[in-house]
Image (cartoon, rainbow, N blue to C red; front, side, top):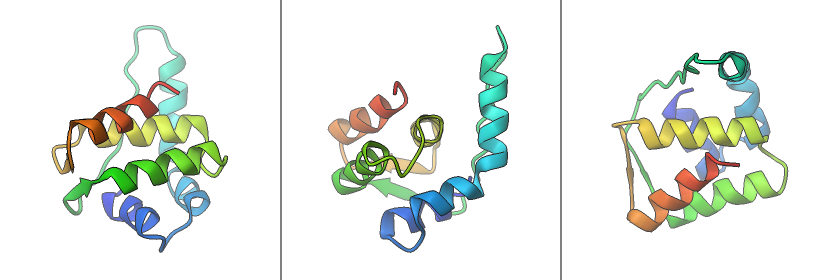
Length: 105
């Protein structure tokens, strides 16, 4: 997953559905790995830009998920990637908590 592609989704230049198609292979690998007891599930993230997630971005991600435009495994993967990346900053603790809560869906 490239941060620039996720940024396109947040800006409306790429649909959530097309984004999920772009990350399908790595998402499938993440899902399979997470099923194995004691195994870690890889998150592939290319930090090709720095990203600041604000309240509106977090709300968009929640809306895409609640509207069924992003699957549960994909929103969890995205939330984990955002939370773990050093190239991603959050507007404030409330926004960070909101994004992290998506990883428990």
